[in-house]
Length: 93
Image (cartoon, rainbow, N blue to C red; front, side):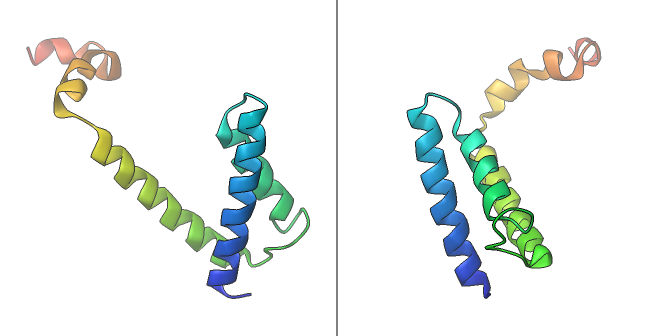
């Protein structure tokens, strides 16, 4: 199966499972994980090419990190320096 077909299967399964889980008042991430287990090679086997799936997943992680970077504000990071770095933030004062 080509990458476009796999992407369509991933998007359809993730959107359906995400909507179903959100209707049950749980986090959408649970639906995404469940849909990945169902359509993967050890579930129904709709997407069996593991290498292509890993490449597709890496691209998704890159996009996720990019979106997180767009949402971050430097002032918020400066406030969080003590909880993130612990006592090391006190020396830089």
